[in-house]
Length: 594
Ligand SMILES: [Zn+2]
Image 1 (cartoon, rainbow, N blue to C red):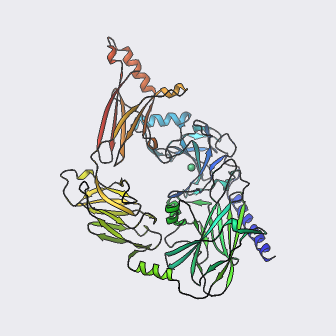
Image 2: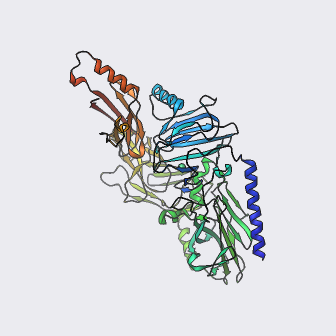
Image 3: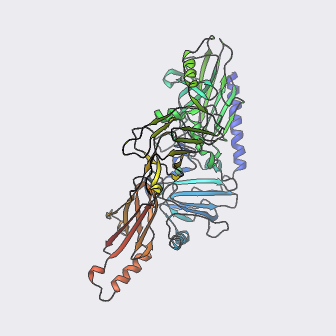
């Protein structure tokens, strides 16, 4: 009876919250930006590498080129074209203080498309980021603004859609505005993880304590048959749960999850909104080492000291539990909810055992005592044998007791290799890495950079870097292995012949593969008979494409009309120039018949 009343109270609290949202956020203002019914590939806030999904991904059934509509009246406030990230993106500012974002487009539409094409030719650039302060290109709710695509860092055709608060730039859950997936399934809680704190910031073993196969139903609860045995010590908990939505086979994330200890609220995480500069807290939100090793994202029910993500409601202990009385018992309750208010509850009974010494904890503590440590909120300098790391105060989320090792320089290498702690510990703000150049490189200083690898045996990739005063310096976003590398190799350029795919449009283009082996591509340009032409660069496919536009047709007219034109001159001369981040340049000419 007691638990029934408590749940009833909780339900009231939740519906109360929803009513507050309904009042705060207009419910019919934004329309669905595509023709289909709400058909989500990814809901808001899905956990991804280094970020929470900032919008909703809408299904286009594998197709490119479906019309995308303005969600409400407004004006174009920003146009961003990038080789990666959102690819071709459009931002609309609305009169009610919100803006909407449409990303991974294949193309823009109408007057917007014309403006962009002109802008790219005037500025001789494919990529740009233009913000409009004053209304210029206006749109009406339902106007076609672009065609859906797969541009930028997208792993398949879809539309990425966002609603933002224009004043704060915070991204809001479209569900607050009534844009919801179809979802009749309650979330599934797979496992509950138990963590023991050795001391502030240091976690010991994990114990997995819940398995649905070993549970029974009691009222609304799925109750674990096993009682959890704990010590009089400090613990934290983690939840492995997911949700299924209509018309989608793969599991999605949760909207909220909550943890109670003996009917006292300890922790809630709710994904209503977040700012871009806090999305990387995902790495503190989850059990990061476990994710790196096991590829499973366990969401913690406690908050690390360096985790400043604003979406938590916790008690004074930030969700950690201090059990002090031996030989007592109680219950833990976990709730997982999706945005459609489908919920699942798990209950676990626990017993605090008699006081005893935990040998594993002691051994771990001793092991840590022999190591130097970094602390969240504290800038620190770490140096050894020509290696220097300058930690920002926001670089780490929790105490990090690290190792720093030097591996001697190999014959073909520029410097020693250094290992600084391990890639399974998350880094928030990047830190500066400097490595001393052991030998002069005779005029090749501007080709030096720092290479990074997770493990010694992996291929090292450039994290950039510059040479100054005997040191090569770069920003590192991960712990791991570092060494100085030299990039004198220019990018590669290769023509890819068109494949007729049953659409004449497929042949109205020239494709080139452009790639760089180390420093990465800085710039790329194409010229047709000396005139700059617009190359659309898709970084994920290393593909540079020229879609025939007016320049092509004007040039074609011109060379066909040349008097006494020998047939050999009736070809386009196309120059492709690609420069990498260490200024190694490739220029290749192609003679292409019209
Ligand atoms: Zn997306």
